[in-house]
Length: 140
Image (tube, rainbow, N blue to C red; front, top):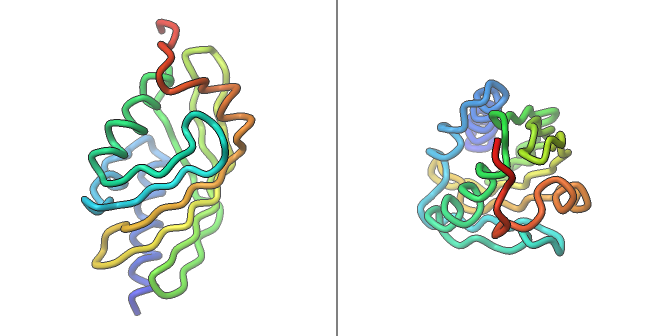
């Protein structure tokens, strides 16, 4: 039964993110979440804890975006504590470049919270559209 609840939670999260509302996503992250962005980009690493994910990943990402970030689930598969979401992002960067990445997210949930998240994406697009998280973005 828990896999169905986990699946429903992430379906709700992505239905809200498709509208540009990231609050349910942030609320479902456990305080001790481990979020790994795969690859070899400047963004690629494991963010330990919700505070680090918000400060070191999501805050710098928001500075790169000229429009509201949206993400739409294409497919959601659940088994036990794991939910896999295939998704498409939709946002325009301040570099005036669309950043519409294709993602595969692997979530591990416990107690209604995301404990682990592994993110797979087009890393060439990450680098081209987002650059380095420490670079200043052009003004809007």
